Image (cartoon, rainbow, N blue to C red; front, side, top):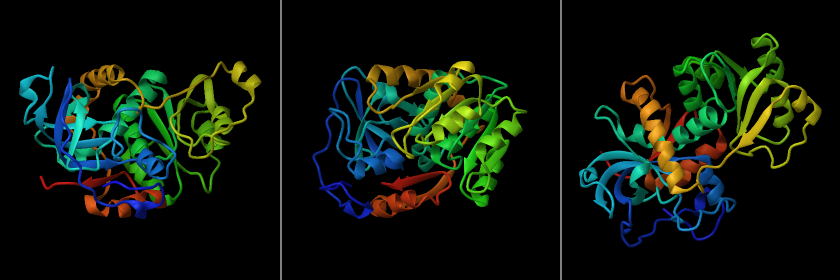
Length: 325
């Protein structure tokens, strides 16, 4: 599913392209399902072009079976069920992936669930645990607690014995976040999350904040970030610019960082996948963690899937079914 020009969800239309050919270290995946993510929406709107060399077709994560392997790929990967982080091309029947960016899907795992994992797992692991240095006993504040990122961050943090505070825009979503394990879910439309976080932590503040909003949320985040706390930005849904009080930041020795995953090198993503496979993937294999699923749409209904994401009513991951199985 592609489009001719950027626009609303209805710009999508089916297209037929030549079968992709595997290059060095690449595999070809017969796609079963593809995850829908906020960057897909931003790309469709014309504000997030694919990096050089990436497919122009949206889609950053897929599940399926490897049907061809390129030079440098172990032959035993052929016919393996995998999910993979990709730089584009997920909304299609066949998708290229770097072999080292694939995770082997356990026999018990549904392929729709498998497609809902890579993008959020790679993003959360890198930003919360690598850039944010999150560790046992600390408190994580994550905004958008019922989004794909929010639900993944909550589950991972709880699995590593952290406390989690999350924000959401309705009582229904707050209840869902609490059911998932959040120690405190704040309805930001009714309660000031800064006050709520500081009260919950006895005035200490959160040790790590995963921020997808930016804009005027940044200073509010810093106001409930602990001494030596880490603020990690992964999206700017609330605006590109932020005005902050640098004197407060210095006095509390706070650290601000951020990242985008898609344009990072294949080598970086491969190293990240290795760490995830060792430290986080066992949690999915033994069912300690499972992705929160919102709704599955047929690939042909990708416009409806994007409309649902933009409406903001979803809880968990939206997934496209490309092929049965």
